[in-house]
Length: 120
Length: 106
Image (cartoon, each protein chain N blue to C red):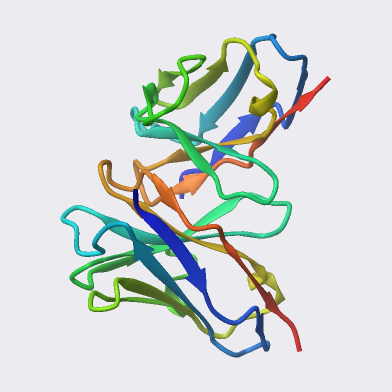
């Protein structure tokens, strides 16, 4: 059973870059057809897809965040990462990493989520 | 961006009752519509994908229907563990989610 675990700082200063990592266990991040996404949720609100990365480095981002987002993958560590630049208080959210395998962009696997707070 | 509108925002029902949740898309998503369940403090869990296909391990009391712009998630008989927030999600274009329907105990 594939499991995901997010890690990274819980507090980020305004205008800085939020950096998170997701570690995949119970399966290979290089599994054919598996796309790895980041999704966020402002506390008490709905879900927003940020983007995905494939094991070969191919990425696709939410157009509304594209100018500030970068995702990468480290197959040797079975990890993928998110960088979100120029953060503001509006970026305060629970960030989930998620995996879509059998069906493209259907999120079968989720991490537990990590709260990232933007504050000075 | 394809906007998904869920209704009602809150559904107050008793265990054993039938729940009917709606999701409307701003443009056709064909059958590329999924449903997730989220409980407090937990990540969402996939219930239904491609309108009506149940994910692995999901009980038969959960069913989905619809096509184009109008979709429905039905829970035939609510169990205590079904009281949660439900989100729809489309993958016809880059993924977007609805605002959620909270199913609460009446």
